Image (cartoon, rainbow, N blue to C red; front, side, top):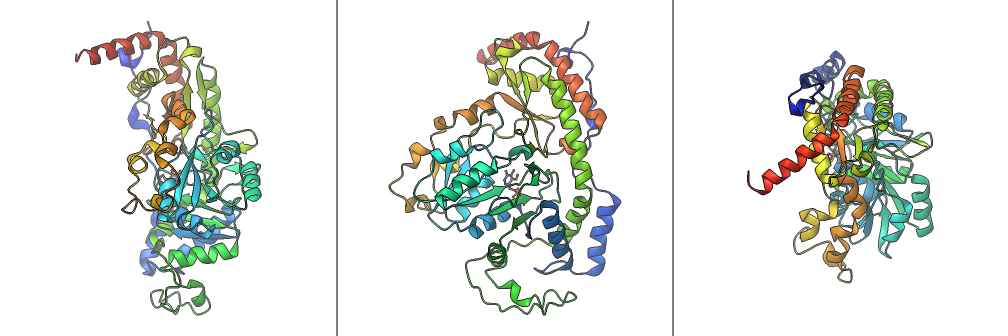
Amino acid sequence: MERIALFGGAPVLDNRQHRRWPAVTSEERESVGRVLDRGVLSGPLAPEATAFEAEFARFVGAKHALLTHSGTSALHLALVAAGVRAGDHVVVPAFSFVATPLAVLQAGAIPIFADVDPINGLLTAGQAAEVLTPRTRAIVPVHIHGAPADLSSLLDLASKRGISVVEDAAQAHGALYQGRPVGAIGHTGAFSLQSSKNLGAGEGGVFVTNDARAAQLANEVRNFGQNVAAELDTFDSSRPLDGTRPLDSLRVGWMYRGNELLAAFARAQLRRLPERTSNCQRNAERLASALGELPGVRPVRAPVGSTSAYHKFRVTLDPREAGVDLPPKMLRGAVIRALKAEGLEVVLWQTVPLPAQTIFQRRDGFGGGWPWSTDPETDFGSMYDPAHFSCTQRLLDGSIVLFSQSCPLIAQSDDIVDAYAEAFARVWRHRRDLAIWAEREARADDSGG
Ligand SMILES: Cc1ncc(COP(=O)(O)O)c(C=O)c1O
């Protein structure tokens, strides 16, 4: 008789067969070695960084790209370059990584959370419209897990209100919205190069835009507020630290530049990204088709007309459709235990809407409650009440993410992905026994056993 691994059967997969990410080949080693041989390690106009920027801009169909030291810093630049100022309101989805609203705070602005589509976790124009205020300066759609948000309706809404759309494309390198790469479809956008991302290079980010003025402003903010463009004609690539730009800060700025080792590594990764992305998408579609056959199991797919980069592979579980009498969170927990026992990588990633996080409940900000204190008329305590974000909470309670940050889908071979389908189907055949086990475990926990 078949037994799932949680109940003593042999696991479908030896977990050690997963490939770690990012994949480091001789190309990355040679690229980084080339930088060390050259001896130029940094500088706003250093050769690897500028080459990467040109290549990445081409990849996402943007006129301008700027390498930064993180996706969060790229997003901060994107907000400032889109016109966000201290005290403004900026709409962000309640379902994202905390860097999205933190970048808003770093710009001195106030994040206003909107609930998301309960099926795919994306911000819709309708939900954004519900939370607009007279102080709203920008909307930040997040292409969560690599699936594009509906940019056309968000841009329509923004243009009617005279505000900007800033794309958080941290997870969405190569994702397509109506056939166009995301990132610079809005006014400005940001990508992350943190290791788990489909384009991973340790830590790093990229600011993108088609607007020359926004690019210049972002470049200044990236470099202590200095006018980097002033040295374009006189820059000597052999002496990048002896720049000729005036050391006069024109505006508030930070040091958000990337470095040459990061740029060289990212260039090597970028060369392989199109092929890796299509392989990842093919595997994701095959896995989604297989899992979609199971009652109550729904892989999250990109909306019609767009193509996900499948940075994360989320699966929702509906106990009613599956015919098991368990609350969603309990089913979720039991399925994670069972799949992990089969050798799979399974994570939850976020578990609550962003406004439930301590920073937004406390709102201490930069001390004394700034920037919230600039807006005494708004009751943020009520606005940030997690109860307002029931679609986000429902999605998170009733879903799991297959694969992990260390071993994401894009890193895996076809065989590993097929083993996921097999393991899931096996666990699902035993879901009623799993439900009985989960209830027994809960009772034992309750009685302290
Ligand atoms: C949606 C989203 N936005 C922003 C970021 C921030 O990127 P980074 O970690 O490179 O600063 C991340 C990173 O995980 C992210 O997932």
